[in-house]
Length: 105
Image 1 (cartoon, rainbow, N blue to C red):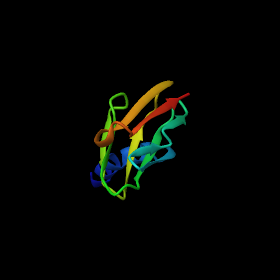
Image 2 (image 1 turned 60 degrees about the horizontal axis):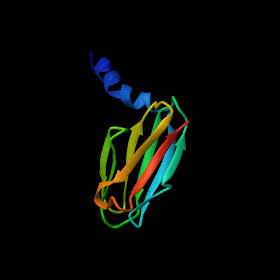
Image 3 (image 1 turned 90 degrees about the vertical axis):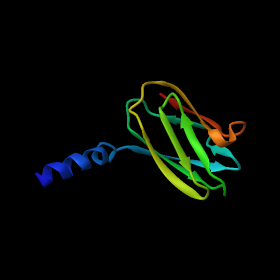
Image 4 (image 1 turned 180 degrees about the vertical axis):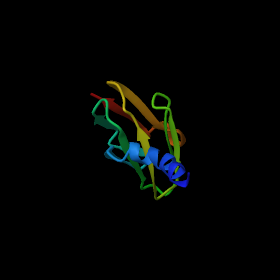
């Protein structure tokens, strides 16, 4: 029984074990790169590295993701597999400058 529970708990990790990895920096309240192209139909692991000293929120209504990243910290966000299209994201704490888009091809 314990092995079954352990396997169930491990399954989400296994599902993203083969995910493509991409890094987005938050620097001077901007996302770098502001435009990221990823393949359609693949699981994606985004590493968001906030190099600013203040927190920022990675948010995307289209991706259904929302994550606050403290200053000088990293966060991991899994997305996909996605269909081709454009998926905008923004930093809720600095919406005027922290904007980006994920292009899925």
